[in-house]
Length: 232
Image (tube, rainbow, N blue to C red):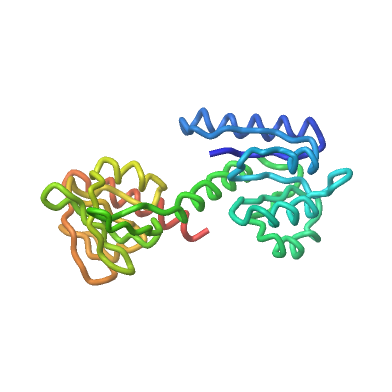
């Protein structure tokens, strides 16, 4: 995942790059960071940026103009504006800004926003499921649970059920976005669909899945963290 920092003030640009590197070190993340001193330099770059921290009040091509040009060729980039004024927020809807950060940027707010942006990208990404050429692309957020059944996996989603040759360990890696929990050797569950936790897990569609006794406490703790994050 590539994170871009675009700000014409070198001190701010270096500070935000430093915060990204701190996030990378703390979370053992494979993110890469790239900096730009102007909107023109950013637009001339051929890098595929996933998350962009973009200063609005830049000399020359300002941040809003830069974002408008980005949207002409890239609809998926997550744009987070940096600004000293709240008056720009309404205009951000036009370019589908993910968030605004007010300058001077505080470390906690920056980190929280970066985490949420990364989670949002992962949550809205897709997985490939299917057997013997019957291929489907499904959104991760639509997955209710994944079950291991007789040498293959079954993926239960809001829109249907699919068989897959992807292993449980591979699914655990694919679904590593903070929303899913491996509750049993044969089940990975989306915590958004959990209604109750007892000896089994009751899902909001009425289904029940097995819960490993040793995972019960960890699951309850993970659900509390998930609920707090989702409530923000």
